[in-house]
Image (cartoon, rainbow, N blue to C red; front, side):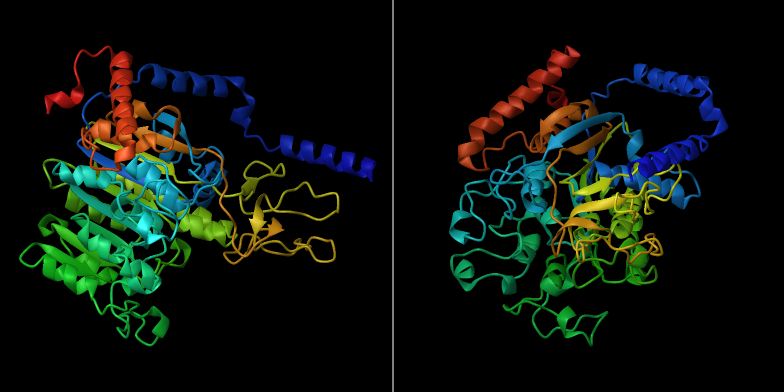
Length: 527
């Protein structure tokens, strides 16, 4: 067996070595490439202007492995080898890492992480918009422990603000920008225990209308906005898609009434969405599904716009404000596909996300717009097996296991793909692992893949983008954003026990920046 394995490995290496492009066999190819990159870094100038606009792109669950695999898939979808493909995110000049743990767990969820990078405070698992003194699902611990977000800081400074997501607009990531909840799952009052309602806690959907005057709201989540018995306009025969609320409130109608006399529009399908002129629109609410939006690979383009289209519409509406804007764009279904153990869907979501970032850069100027691309947490996705150059990222390794069975290049540490039967892995030689339905193998059986805890990448370009270099705590991101845009400097309205620490962090940021640039003034003071 050992001799056979050595023979297979040698043959495998010989075959692999023959795949190199001719130009790549010339060392001058790599030297010239490196020199060009070096010169671009040497020519880089720090942009120390105040960020008028902030574009914050969040790939939910987009860990480093997902990022790398999506890069390869993007190239392969364009009939290229894939490995050398340049993602839009790859062009961001400043790169850092963020530590994603929560106060109570080594590996965090999307609610705790959203509170960190949007509100600047780390908190506990499953809580959103509150500090770590709040306890999961216990309403009374929420009072007095609310923390506000960079979205609210921007709004208070006179900027226009918006959220775009591929999940429901009440989901953890968007909720982190406007809600305060001891439970991330309190989407509507029907999701709350009577005790929490009796103690005065309110659901996330109602907070969407009350807490911050958000100019653009795009995503899914219709069913949490309407009373029980309300038929969904797209799926009227499906009872499960209908309204969920017990209190009888119709929040979509309430939002429309609140905007009476203003240039405000509501849309639930692409036809209505496309008809909305951003030049004459100040407020937009677009909810395309009862819950989360469809995966990009399954999306009906006649009914639902892509994340590229929704990002563009949001920017065109928000950028009319002469004081600037803050926009949160979340590709939330990267995470949900990973939870299903489906790398195909996850990577196609990530490729679409990169396209939305590209559109955002086209519509704004690097001179006055700070653009961030990052993730909230990672997933236990592995990239393994010595695949040949240009081999499908969704394919199989040419190097088989010691059980003489093949395995896929991408696999999960845990999840629904665990398929060991009688101590043997399934034989996938005749299985199409590039299929949209294929679930990658996993090492441990779970109904849903967990998150993983490694650091996530933070990519930045535009004014003050250099502040995002290095390895930082995830909550640093919100404070660096606030400093770059000169918003939210007074955080004393947040949780009192944290005021001193927050103020110290803010002053430290200013001192660091001045030391780096040799500045004798505060850039925010010129406003």
